Length: 243
Image 1 (cartoon, rainbow, N blue to C red):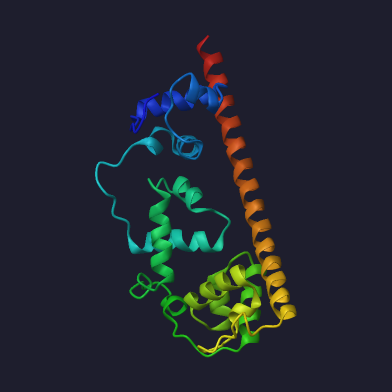
Image 2: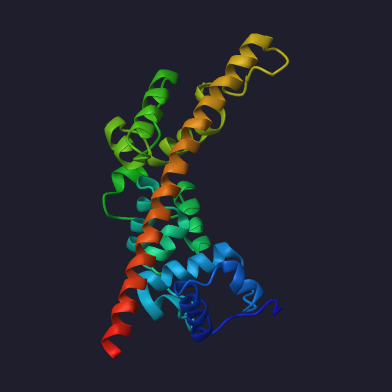
């Protein structure tokens, strides 16, 4: 089997067409010597279904994206159910890691300092908030499907803070939003009951987020199936017209 190979656009199209004609991914690996993991192959497949041959073309040089475009993509990631890979397919961006890096830079404040359209949300200075306010803000984010921008506008806090609080809440539960100012109560100092309650609450929050992620994946898989059906139907019509 080939290894460490970079396939040409035509080679990728041949594999994708075989797959669309009914060849399984396993058969592509075993019988046709495809040397790609399934995740990478599906990314190529989705780009081909969305953009045609253009989606498989390798850029001749590194693309330069405007700050406005980066901002648009990052906001769509935060405020929708699309994953990094989903967005890379939608906008035909070669790597999902590119979008991941943009998102990290925005949350760290490295990009949004100089972004001009509606800067008040992204440049807003932090203000003092109570524990109850932080909980209310995070619950607003969850109930509105990760709308960090809307939450920042509604509660007059910085976008970065909303994102940070939500991440902490997701990983560790409400206790993570307490303002301990360097005097965090150690695990040893907690009673067994306190520690158990904290762990149960963190698990509850994590399960809630996992359920949302599973639902998102289901929607993406359904979209992929619909695209494959449409492509297959189109090919059948083309074959009939040539007879």
